[in-house]
Image (cartoon, rainbow, N blue to C red; front, side, top):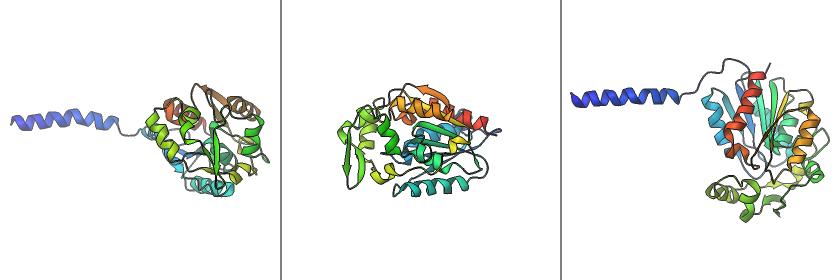
Length: 252
């Protein structure tokens, strides 16, 4: 009997913990969030943001960019948008910002969120924007036409506010970005017609914070500044997720 009571008590204490880990239900705004990664990392870089949004009840889709060409990246993102049932908040990090600018014209997209991301106008390329206000730390190498951050410098450049075990893995797992993708000009700028939100990573050494501020001011984006490295989606996920949730709540 005592064993039965003990087991019952264990279940009673466990149930609230399980219940608290279940996602909430989104009752207003856009419930679909599509996340687009940038250069040097893949879709797994959104894991912490996924977890933050999922527990709040959002349906999260992560686009794995093929990085064969800029058009291929845009096509993959458009396919993810069209697969959603209902309004979408489209989020891009790094060069993913150029992709969401080009892919975000769909009527399903109700808002754009730029997370330390490029925000080109039509006719501008990632390479052109980066050259206009160069990165604060130039630790780039090129192999077989793809651009990488020098592995031994990855933590200092990309994620100085992350522990070494995480940045070391990221450094050796870099997919690289073809230079032809960086040189491709955007054919559209969805931020001209859609509400946009933007996050400046104030300690960013990959994408100059002054370039971020300039682009976001030009676009009239609602700007949030976070003291973080370029990897702020990993180091400050709660703060980044808060901006995405606000964009979703504002969606009409």
